[in-house]
Every structure is written in structure tokens, then in C-alpha cells.
Image (cartoon, rainbow, N blue to C red):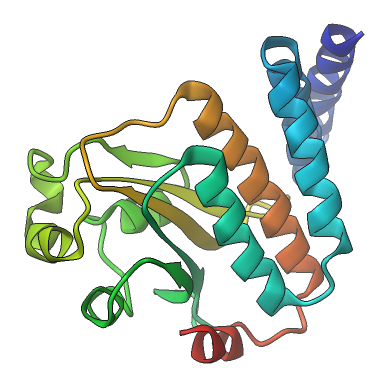
Length: 216
């Protein structure tokens, strides 16, 4: 049954794209990916259903981003984490929720525009970014000192993108030792970030800059 639903949504997505209905196609593609995950990992799919209900029931965007970070850390592990949203100009990432970081890290990454950090790459490329070891990743070199001071060796960043394809922010989780989340973990946080993105879009009238100032 799940496999049949996946095929239906993939076929629907192809037709919608062919007719220029990109937003609806993205929605169908996400549903197809959701059911594909259910074939391989039924327990993961069950957990995502629970998370989806929690996201839909949350009417406060401030609470939503705080819960999103906590639940992301639960999904993929990590000793530290932060959630960033695009500022009102849409050209830099601002930390709106964090867990485990000291003031030095928060000040250093208060305004991210580069493509060397994991979060910057995820934002600019619109795809998940994993740095298994910041000490050997050449692009990350400018940030190694703050990583060492903050106590993390690895990081994954997942973009928060709504159904229209608009980038809203990035969820990042950090690890004390060399690490790469499993394929299932990355799929799960990818789906969850999509839920958060859609919910944030529904809270469009909320001032994201206000979120940043109140959460840090």
C-alpha cells in the first residue's frame, strides 16, 4: 500500500511540474519521499507523524523554533545545536534558538553570510551539508578555532525550505567527535525541517527579526 502511494505521488509530481505547478509538485515529491522512507523505516515514519502533529498544533512561532531545535537534536543526536532564520533582508542567517553554546560562539556566528561554514553552505546550496571532521575540511578552516573553543568536531546543517522552495533558515547539530549521521537520520531531519518550514510560512505575519532578538 505504501509503495503504491509513493508511485502515485511521484507520478502526480511529474505531471504537476510539467504543467508549471511547482509548489504543488514539491508537495507531492515530499509526500513520495515520506512514503519511501516508510517502506524502509516504518518506525521512523511513525515518529515523523507524531512530530507533524506537534508542529501543526503549535500556534506560537517562538515556541515552534525552540521545539524544532530540541526535536532535531533528538532525531540526529548531537551535543550542541542551533537554529537560524534568514533576516528580514534575506541575505544572512541569524541564530534564533541554541543549545549548549557559549557567548563566544553565538557572537561569532551571529550573522552568517559565507559559504565556508556548514550552515552557510546549506543555505546557499539549499541542501543538507555534513562536515564529518572540521579539522580536515579545507573550506571550514577559517572557523576551526571557534569550533575547537566551542568543543565540536563535526556538524550537520539542514536547510528549512517551504513548499514554494523559499529558504527560511537552517537547523544545525554539532558533535564533540568525528561523526556522520546515518542516512535515515538525515532523511528524518530533512522531512522535519520541511514541516517546520511550512509551519513558519503559515506564521508569515510574525516578525522573524523579533524572533531573533527574543531567543538569544
